[in-house]
Image 1 (cartoon, rainbow, N blue to C red):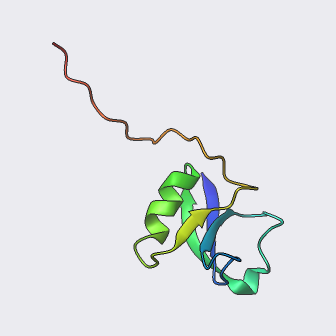
Image 2 (tube, rainbow, N blue to C red):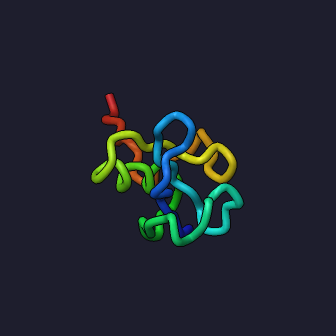
Length: 77
């Protein structure tokens, strides 16, 4: 599990960013809210979007391509 935080400050585009613990791009831990432990950034992003509309993943610490833990089940033919 990885610990994720949500920046309370907006970036230059007016977006809150989700960061992994230890990311150098977090402006300060005093300006971040703890989201919790997640397997990947996509799970943390879903949690953050429950409270904020303009939320994205940090491009420095969260990879763009992730696989969800729960994947779509395919019915056999």
